[in-house]
Structures are given as structure tokens and as C-alpha cells.
Image (cartoon, rainbow, N blue to C red; front, side, top):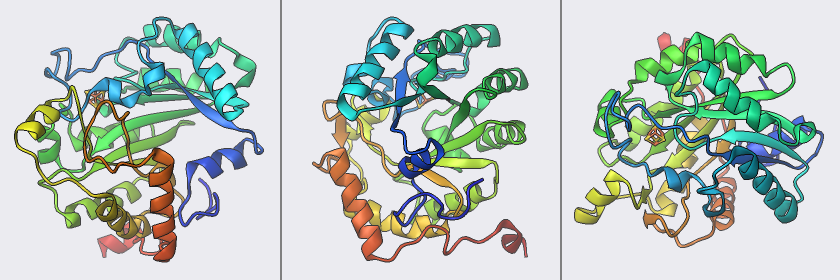
Length: 321
Ligand code: SF4
């Protein structure tokens, strides 16, 4: 666990600075890999259609989509990162769909194949999944890589409310996330959860409560925060076009973050403050800015307001009194 606000000059612990510190200033990039998995709420084992906000393509930058072979995906991803950003080290990131939704022996074959590409420059393995697709055998498999690499297990929390999880067809409850976090709690894995803010039926007070829930788990090291954005190819996209509903403007979302970040435990590293799909898939909200411009806007505004991660954090013990 890092010390409070250990990582960087922003008023929150941010991932870029964490990586630079951890890897001696080297430029480290995540290389997205599509292992061809599906999800239990897509293939019928728990439901069909997937989470209502999801179009898997929207996770992945356009250039990484539809590449057939893992080796080829990684080689091309590394080449782009080297040419475009002078990347020196890499984290192999199984991102789209549920990347532990297969028997452990099959997962091992996939992870091994990915990690065999340019291994001397790979420093980490990151696996995105759902809490209901994690078990002790899969955790042991992931841990087996951690002698040589940093291994990051990323799970969708999305909302802390089961009513929301049901409405978005998650096919998974908050209690299942809690179980998975506890199962992976005393391991060498770095745990990350991601959240979505802005479901139209959740109030600001409800969303601020996510911070207490995240803070409750000392094993959570990273978070990815997202605002709800509606993409083409999703069930929510179809509904939104028929009946648009209120979504965050950039100003409103920043205002929300300015209240949320001070509530978040100060040692947690924020990997992402917002989500953005490619503009060809984005329906709304369209803030009409590039990713870097959005990041700059939010950072400047947080700084202007004197926001500091953790200053309003309430340790769990004080919540129980
Ligand atoms: S959000 Fe994740 S779990 Fe839900 S359908 Fe999309 S890829 Fe699957």
C-alpha cells in the first residue's frame, strides 16, 4: 500500500505518477489484448445482451479492434506505443469482455501466449473481469505470474446498489463483488475496481456512498472512475435514442468528483477519472473535447477548488460508532 498522496503532483494519487515511480521513470504502457472471451450475461448462462451500457468495442481504441491473433495484437500494440509515445515497458492488459470466463487451463494458455511476446520488456499483467467469474483456482493461476510480474486483477463494481445492478442486467450482485474481493484479499494481486456514476435513478448522495464502500476494503489498491456514457450498439443506447435522459455535463461531473475524491481513502491510486469511447461510437454525453483536454479541464478545476484526495475520508471504524 502506498503512503497517502504518494504519487504525483495532482491533488489525487494518479496512475501515471505511480507507474513512473514504480518503474524508475520508465515509460510504461498498457497493451490491450482481446482474448476472444464472452460474458455470462451475454452467452445465456446468466442472461443475454450483456450489461445494458456495454458495447465491448467501446472499451477498445479503434486501432486495437478485430485483430485475430494474440501475438499480432501485442506486437502491433507495442509498436504503436513505441512509435507514438516512446514506450519502454509494457503491461499486458486483457480488457474486453470477461477475461477469466473460461477454465483455468485455458486461461493459462492465453496468458502464457500473451506474456511470451517481448517478455524482457513486459512488467505486468492486468486482467479485467467480473466478480462472479473469479474463484480460488483462477486466483492461484494469476498469482503464479506475480513472482516475475505485477499482476492486477480488475473487477467491475459499477454500482454498489443491487437494484441498479439488476436494472443494468449485470447478472451479478454487490455481495458477489465482496466475496471476490475477500477471496483475492490476502494475495499478491493488486486489486482494482471500476465504477460508473450517473445512472439516472441514482442521486448524488447515493453515488457519494460509493466512496465509503470502496474505502471499506483495504485490499483495493486502484480505482477506475467513469461517468455514464451511452454508446452505439448497447441496449441503453437504443433506449436513450428513444427517450433521452439526463447525463452529466463535464462541469457537473467535475463538480461531483470534487466532492467524491476527498472522501476516497488517500492511499488508493486513481487509474482513471472518466471514461471515453471513440467518438464514432459515442452517443452522449458529447463533451466535444479530446481525452487530454477533458483530463486537463478536470485537473485544473480540482486544483482551483483546493480538492485533496482523502481529506474527508472517514475510516471504517468511525462509521461504526
Ligand atoms: S460490461 Fe463487462 S461484463 Fe458487462 S457485458 Fe460488457 S464486457 Fe461483459
